[in-house]
Image 1 (cartoon, rainbow, N blue to C red):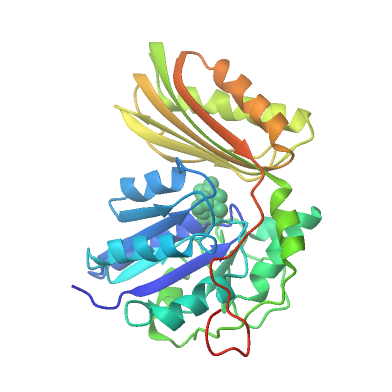
Image 2: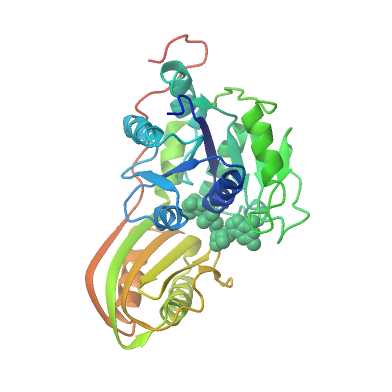
Length: 351
Ligand SMILES: Nc1nc2c(ncn2[C@@H]2O[C@H](COP(=O)(O)OP(=O)(O)OP(=O)(O)O)[C@@H](O)[C@H]2O)c(=O)[nH]1
Ligand SMILES: [Mg+2]
């Protein structure tokens, strides 16, 4: 058994590219003969990201029903469970609206679980397109708080944005999970400790933090669809994403991240958009042949009250060409964050 796996926490706003980077990094480590496990996290369940990690062949666990800080004991339980598989590295992806990770996760782990995990520098990812468009004050608040506590900030999607606008930060890197640019160097820096874990904590007003998260509508859904005649995953997801994008835009609702995953016996396809009107990014079996039975997962985060988002998604699912059954649809505003533990700067022990 590997006694102390590296624990790599990769934060960053919704859609920044956390899951895509973690999967690319885990594949790269596998080429070096190193095993990775992945912990995903969400306010609700049925996570597209967990399915992707499992489909990638990795040991994966999830913390659902709240962010890592509010469900710290569960994070440790899942990390310990994964540790039994002797991974060399455990990647953990916090919810994309979450911040204050240093005080509520990193310090508590360093304080009480240092013998189990080698915690490395806190990486925060930035999508250059998001950094260039921070008009929504709640999004801007969360985004800037996340950057403030980062040990290293990595601009993602360098294949799309080779020249991101500069941020007033000491340590920035550029990565592409699509081309692999920068991933090996980033892993080497954090795992060797040449980029150290600083332990810097935030000064943050939890009322403002709660208000910013509550300004998001958070929707997770899954449903089974029987198609007669059979349809390919692309034939199902394409029109669905078009319809959701059109209806949300018509209602003036900004999409923050919309992910859809269709699992069929002919293959699995994921399609996602991070802004209204953008071309879906697709991964997986784009050429899968038509199938009768589809299991569809939807994770949508949007700047809105929950009610209109829920109605739009329910309507789009009802309009799918096929017979829907077993629909489970949860849509809410995230509850105020209540960390299980919170390090206070200057205090030796965690309260
Ligand atoms: N072109 C390009 N697209 C990328 C890259 N990394 C991520 N993406 C795309 O960006 C979108 C968001 O990526 P995710 O990895 O799902 O982002 P995330 O930070 O995990 O998002 P949440 O889990 O919602 O917080 C997806 O459609 C990815 O395909 C990259 O390096 N290049
Ligand atoms: Mg993710």
